[in-house]
Length: 444
Image (cartoon, rainbow, N blue to C red; front, side, top):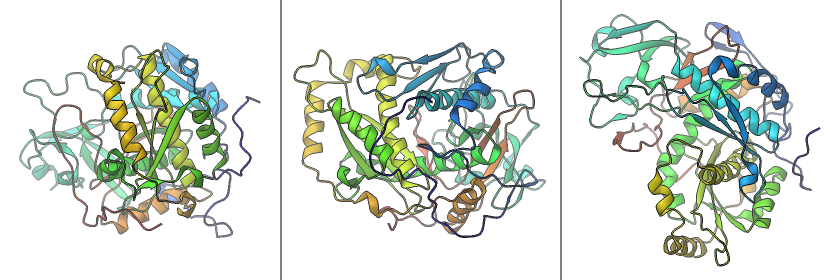
C-alpha cells in the first residue's frame, strides 16, 4: 500500500452518510437509461474504484490523446501534499492539467482525468445543427439560452444562427439542445474577427469519471462551486468574519493532516464557508507564508475551492487545491499564468497588507455545524443535487454525453442555466440571476 498522511481524529470522508438506514436511492434516468451506482472507495474522497485502478486505465490512453508526460512536482515545494501534472503539448486549450490528492495515486488520477476530459471536449464528434434560437426552438426543445453566462460585447440574439448540440435534460427527463460554445473547450480560432463567441467557454461543468454517474456528480458540484464563488468570493477576498471558519473547529482527519503539514512548513491557512442559497457545502481556502523575513524568495497568497455534499471532502478539496495552485505557480507549468503575475507576485508591501487584513479579521464559524448531505450512491447524490436545483427555480440541467467507445472513459459536460459561470480573463461576462438568491449564505 502507498504511504499517506495520518491523523488521530476520525475522517468525515469515511462511509458515514446522511441517510444511513434509509432505503437505497432509486435509479436515475440518464441518456434514456435507468442507472444506479454505489460508492466503493472512501479514502479521502468518494469514488467508484481505487485511484490506482483509474491510473492504470488512463495511462494506457496516453498515446491516443497525445499525453506525453505525467510529472510529479510535489518536491518543488516544502509542503509535501502530492501534486502531479499531465501534459498534452498539442492541446486545443491548456496544455497542462493539474491533480492533487492525499496519495500520489490520487493526484495522478486527478491530473490524468482532467487531461482526458479536456481532450474529449476539444474533440466533440456529435451531430451539430446551425440555426437561430427563434427558429430552432420551434422545431426542438432548446435550453434557456438567455440564462447562460455570455460575453457582454456579444450578447445572444434570437435571430442569430449558432451551432447547437444535443444533450439530455436531467430535470425535464428528455432531450435538449444547447449552444455548442457552452460545451466545447476547443479554443483554436475562438473569438477571431468575424467569429466572436457569445457564450462563456470554459471547462466549468466538464467532468470525467470511472462511470457516467460519477462524472455527472462531479460536474454538478463544480457548477455549484463556481456559482458560489461568484456570489461569495468577495467575502473571501475581504476576509469577511461572518464567512471565516475557525481552523481549530475543522475536525476531519484528512483536513487536519494537510493543515498540520502546512503549519509545519510555515504556511498559514484561512478557510471560508462560501455556501450559497443552494445549501450545498462550498469552501474556500487561502494560504500564505507566515513570515518571509528569512526566505530567499517571496510567494503571493494562493486560493483553493471545494464543493461536496460531505463538508469534510469539500474543505479537503479547498485546502489541497490551494496547495496545488501554489505548486503550479512555483513550477511555472501552466499556460495561462502570464509573466506579469510573476513580476507582481510576492510583492513584500502587498504581502504585508494581506497579512494585516488576515490578522484583523477574526473567524466566527464552527465547521462542525455544517451537515453531511452525502448518500451512499452516486444516483442518490445526483437526485439530491437535482432536487436542490429545482427548488431554487432552475428548470434545466443538461448533460452532454462526450464518451467515445474507442476510449472507454465516461466524460460528460453539464450545463445549468441560472448558475453563474467561471470568471473571464479579458472579456466582460454577464451572468444570470437566479429567481431565489440569498447572498448571505445558506442555513447551516
